[in-house]
Image (cartoon, rainbow, N blue to C red; front, side):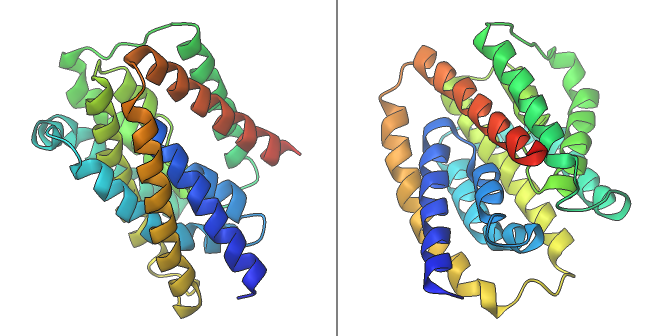
Amino acid sequence: MEFSIFAYILAVFLVAGLTKGVIGLGLPTISMGLLAIVLSPVEAAALLILPSLVTNVWQMVDGPHLKPLLRRLWPLNLGVCLGTWAGAAFLSGLGGPYGAPALGIALIAYALSGLAALRLVVPAGAERWLGPVAGASTGAITAATGVFVVPAVPYLQAMGLTKDELVQALGLSFTVSTVALAVTLAGSNVIGLGLAWPSVAGVAVALVGMRLGQTVRARLSPQSFRLWFFAGLLGLGAYLAARGLL
Protein backbone atom coordinates (compact mmCIF):
# COMPACT_ATOMS: atom_id res chain seq x y z
CA MET A 1 0.00 0.00 0.00
CA GLU A 2 1.33 3.44 -0.95
CA PHE A 3 2.23 5.75 1.94
CA SER A 4 -0.15 8.46 0.75
CA ILE A 5 -3.10 6.04 0.84
CA PHE A 6 -2.01 4.74 4.25
CA ALA A 7 -1.81 8.30 5.64
CA TYR A 8 -5.22 9.07 4.15
CA ILE A 9 -6.70 5.99 5.86
CA LEU A 10 -5.32 7.09 9.24
CA ALA A 11 -6.74 10.60 8.78
CA VAL A 12 -10.16 9.13 7.97
CA PHE A 13 -10.17 7.02 11.13
CA LEU A 14 -9.07 9.99 13.27
CA VAL A 15 -11.99 12.11 12.03
CA ALA A 16 -14.42 9.19 12.29
CA GLY A 17 -13.27 8.36 15.83
CA LEU A 18 -13.63 11.99 16.93
CA THR A 19 -17.19 12.13 15.59
CA LYS A 20 -18.08 8.85 17.26
CA GLY A 21 -16.71 10.07 20.58
CA VAL A 22 -18.94 13.15 20.47
CA ILE A 23 -22.29 11.76 19.28
CA GLY A 24 -21.86 7.99 19.71
CA LEU A 25 -21.95 7.06 16.03
CA GLY A 26 -20.50 7.93 12.66
CA LEU A 27 -17.33 5.84 12.43
CA PRO A 28 -18.61 3.28 9.88
CA THR A 29 -20.58 5.88 7.92
CA ILE A 30 -17.71 8.36 7.63
CA SER A 31 -15.15 5.61 7.09
CA MET A 32 -17.15 3.87 4.35
CA GLY A 33 -17.82 7.13 2.53
CA LEU A 34 -14.26 8.45 2.63
CA LEU A 35 -12.36 5.17 2.26
CA ALA A 36 -14.40 4.25 -0.82
CA ILE A 37 -12.75 7.21 -2.57
CA VAL A 38 -9.44 5.32 -2.70
CA LEU A 39 -10.57 1.71 -2.12
CA SER A 40 -13.35 -0.51 -3.44
CA PRO A 41 -16.50 -0.58 -1.23
CA VAL A 42 -15.82 -4.16 -0.16
CA GLU A 43 -12.20 -3.36 0.72
CA ALA A 44 -13.38 -0.31 2.69
CA ALA A 45 -15.90 -2.44 4.59
CA ALA A 46 -13.26 -5.07 5.36
CA LEU A 47 -10.78 -2.41 6.51
CA LEU A 48 -13.18 -0.82 8.99
CA ILE A 49 -14.26 -4.10 10.64
CA LEU A 50 -11.54 -4.10 13.31
CA PRO A 51 -11.60 -0.35 14.16
CA SER A 52 -15.40 -0.43 14.25
CA LEU A 53 -15.46 -3.51 16.48
CA VAL A 54 -12.89 -2.20 18.97
CA THR A 55 -14.40 1.27 19.29
CA ASN A 56 -17.93 -0.08 19.55
CA VAL A 57 -16.99 -2.63 22.22
CA TRP A 58 -15.31 0.16 24.18
CA GLN A 59 -18.41 2.33 23.83
CA MET A 60 -20.64 -0.61 24.77
CA VAL A 61 -18.86 -1.46 28.04
CA ASP A 62 -18.06 2.12 29.06
CA GLY A 63 -20.99 2.67 31.42
CA PRO A 64 -23.25 1.01 34.00
CA HIS A 65 -26.21 0.27 31.72
CA LEU A 66 -25.02 -2.75 29.72
CA LYS A 67 -26.93 -5.52 31.55
CA PRO A 68 -30.37 -3.87 31.37
CA LEU A 69 -29.71 -2.86 27.77
CA LEU A 70 -28.82 -6.46 26.85
CA ARG A 71 -32.14 -7.64 28.29
CA ARG A 72 -34.13 -4.86 26.64
CA LEU A 73 -32.50 -4.83 23.21
CA TRP A 74 -32.09 -8.53 22.39
CA PRO A 75 -35.03 -8.51 19.90
CA LEU A 76 -33.41 -5.64 17.99
CA ASN A 77 -29.99 -7.28 17.94
CA LEU A 78 -31.36 -10.67 16.88
CA GLY A 79 -33.11 -8.96 13.98
CA VAL A 80 -29.87 -7.19 13.01
CA CYS A 81 -28.02 -10.50 12.65
CA LEU A 82 -30.77 -12.23 10.69
CA GLY A 83 -31.32 -9.20 8.45
CA THR A 84 -27.62 -8.82 7.66
CA TRP A 85 -27.14 -12.46 6.74
CA ALA A 86 -30.35 -12.65 4.71
CA GLY A 87 -29.54 -9.35 3.02
CA ALA A 88 -26.13 -10.61 1.96
CA ALA A 89 -27.85 -13.44 0.12
CA PHE A 90 -30.72 -11.56 -1.49
CA LEU A 91 -29.64 -7.93 -1.93
CA SER A 92 -27.22 -6.41 -4.40
CA GLY A 93 -24.43 -6.37 -1.85
CA LEU A 94 -22.04 -3.69 -0.69
CA GLY A 95 -21.74 -0.76 -3.04
CA GLY A 96 -25.21 -1.06 -4.67
CA PRO A 97 -25.88 2.04 -6.83
CA TYR A 98 -28.96 3.22 -4.92
CA GLY A 99 -28.16 2.09 -1.38
CA ALA A 100 -25.99 5.04 -0.30
CA PRO A 101 -28.20 7.90 -1.58
CA ALA A 102 -31.34 6.24 -0.21
CA LEU A 103 -29.67 5.86 3.17
CA GLY A 104 -28.49 9.47 3.04
CA ILE A 105 -31.98 10.75 2.29
CA ALA A 106 -33.41 8.70 5.15
CA LEU A 107 -30.82 10.16 7.53
CA ILE A 108 -31.58 13.69 6.38
CA ALA A 109 -35.32 13.21 6.93
CA TYR A 110 -34.79 11.79 10.40
CA ALA A 111 -32.28 14.49 11.39
CA LEU A 112 -34.62 17.27 10.23
CA SER A 113 -37.48 15.77 12.23
CA GLY A 114 -35.23 15.68 15.29
CA LEU A 115 -34.02 19.24 14.86
CA ALA A 116 -37.68 20.29 14.50
CA ALA A 117 -38.34 18.61 17.89
CA LEU A 118 -40.70 16.00 16.42
CA ARG A 119 -40.27 13.21 18.95
CA LEU A 120 -40.83 9.59 17.94
CA VAL A 121 -41.91 7.29 20.76
CA VAL A 122 -41.71 3.48 20.91
CA PRO A 123 -44.23 2.15 23.48
CA ALA A 124 -42.63 -0.31 25.88
CA GLY A 125 -45.17 -2.98 24.94
CA ALA A 126 -44.23 -2.73 21.26
CA GLU A 127 -40.51 -3.32 21.72
CA ARG A 128 -40.77 -7.13 21.56
CA TRP A 129 -42.23 -7.12 18.03
CA LEU A 130 -40.98 -3.76 16.71
CA GLY A 131 -37.38 -4.46 17.76
CA PRO A 132 -36.93 -7.44 15.38
CA VAL A 133 -38.51 -5.45 12.53
CA ALA A 134 -36.18 -2.49 13.09
CA GLY A 135 -33.22 -4.84 13.50
CA ALA A 136 -33.92 -6.85 10.36
CA SER A 137 -34.35 -3.65 8.34
CA THR A 138 -31.06 -2.33 9.71
CA GLY A 139 -29.36 -5.60 8.85
CA ALA A 140 -30.63 -5.53 5.28
CA ILE A 141 -29.37 -1.96 4.83
CA THR A 142 -26.04 -3.00 6.37
CA ALA A 143 -25.67 -5.78 3.81
CA ALA A 144 -26.45 -3.34 0.98
CA THR A 145 -24.35 -0.35 2.07
CA GLY A 146 -21.98 -1.37 4.88
CA VAL A 147 -23.59 1.29 7.13
CA PHE A 148 -25.72 0.30 10.12
CA VAL A 149 -27.48 3.49 11.22
CA VAL A 150 -31.08 3.35 9.93
CA PRO A 151 -33.53 2.45 11.33
CA ALA A 152 -31.64 1.29 14.44
CA VAL A 153 -30.63 4.79 15.53
CA PRO A 154 -34.14 6.33 15.23
CA TYR A 155 -35.55 3.28 17.01
CA LEU A 156 -33.11 3.58 19.93
CA GLN A 157 -33.56 7.34 20.14
CA ALA A 158 -37.36 6.86 20.29
CA MET A 159 -37.07 4.56 23.32
CA GLY A 160 -36.63 7.50 25.67
CA LEU A 161 -33.10 6.61 26.81
CA THR A 162 -30.91 9.11 28.64
CA LYS A 163 -27.84 10.58 26.93
CA ASP A 164 -25.46 8.03 28.45
CA GLU A 165 -27.89 5.12 27.97
CA LEU A 166 -28.33 6.03 24.31
CA VAL A 167 -24.59 6.20 23.65
CA GLN A 168 -24.06 2.82 25.33
CA ALA A 169 -27.05 1.30 23.49
CA LEU A 170 -25.60 2.53 20.20
CA GLY A 171 -22.31 0.85 21.08
CA LEU A 172 -24.14 -2.43 21.73
CA SER A 173 -26.15 -2.25 18.51
CA PHE A 174 -23.14 -1.31 16.40
CA THR A 175 -21.04 -4.10 17.95
CA VAL A 176 -23.65 -6.65 16.94
CA SER A 177 -23.88 -5.13 13.45
CA THR A 178 -20.10 -5.18 13.05
CA VAL A 179 -19.87 -8.85 14.03
CA ALA A 180 -22.73 -9.74 11.69
CA LEU A 181 -21.05 -7.86 8.84
CA ALA A 182 -17.71 -9.53 9.61
CA VAL A 183 -19.36 -12.95 9.33
CA THR A 184 -20.82 -11.89 5.98
CA LEU A 185 -17.40 -10.78 4.69
CA ALA A 186 -15.57 -13.81 6.10
CA GLY A 187 -15.97 -15.76 2.90
CA SER A 188 -14.63 -12.93 0.77
CA ASN A 189 -11.05 -13.17 -0.48
CA VAL A 190 -10.71 -9.39 -0.01
CA ILE A 191 -9.89 -9.91 3.66
CA GLY A 192 -6.17 -10.61 3.68
CA LEU A 193 -2.83 -9.57 5.12
CA GLY A 194 -2.67 -6.55 2.84
CA LEU A 195 -5.37 -4.84 4.90
CA ALA A 196 -4.19 -6.11 8.29
CA TRP A 197 -1.67 -3.40 9.19
CA PRO A 198 -3.79 -0.47 8.00
CA SER A 199 -6.69 -1.88 9.99
CA VAL A 200 -4.62 -2.25 13.18
CA ALA A 201 -3.20 1.26 12.78
CA GLY A 202 -6.75 2.49 12.20
CA VAL A 203 -7.77 1.07 15.58
CA ALA A 204 -5.12 3.11 17.41
CA VAL A 205 -5.93 6.33 15.58
CA ALA A 206 -9.69 5.86 15.96
CA LEU A 207 -9.31 5.30 19.72
CA VAL A 208 -7.34 8.55 20.04
CA GLY A 209 -10.03 10.42 18.15
CA MET A 210 -12.77 8.75 20.16
CA ARG A 211 -11.18 9.74 23.48
CA LEU A 212 -10.94 13.34 22.32
CA GLY A 213 -14.59 13.23 21.27
CA GLN A 214 -15.66 11.78 24.62
CA THR A 215 -13.96 14.68 26.37
CA VAL A 216 -16.02 17.07 24.27
CA ARG A 217 -19.25 15.12 24.93
CA ALA A 218 -18.72 15.21 28.70
CA ARG A 219 -18.91 19.00 28.55
CA LEU A 220 -22.19 19.05 26.62
CA SER A 221 -25.59 19.51 28.23
CA PRO A 222 -28.39 17.09 27.18
CA GLN A 223 -29.85 19.84 24.97
CA SER A 224 -26.50 20.54 23.32
CA PHE A 225 -25.85 16.82 22.89
CA ARG A 226 -29.24 16.44 21.16
CA LEU A 227 -28.39 19.29 18.80
CA TRP A 228 -24.97 17.82 17.98
CA PHE A 229 -26.51 14.37 17.58
CA PHE A 230 -29.03 15.41 14.94
CA ALA A 231 -26.64 17.86 13.28
CA GLY A 232 -24.16 15.00 12.93
CA LEU A 233 -26.81 12.77 11.39
CA LEU A 234 -27.79 15.57 9.01
CA GLY A 235 -24.19 16.00 7.88
CA LEU A 236 -23.69 12.26 7.40
CA GLY A 237 -26.92 11.96 5.47
CA ALA A 238 -26.11 14.92 3.22
CA TYR A 239 -22.68 13.49 2.46
CA LEU A 240 -24.02 10.03 1.59
CA ALA A 241 -26.83 11.42 -0.55
CA ALA A 242 -24.58 13.86 -2.43
CA ARG A 243 -21.85 11.30 -3.00
CA GLY A 244 -24.32 8.69 -4.23
CA LEU A 245 -26.22 11.05 -6.53
CA LEU A 246 -23.23 12.92 -7.93
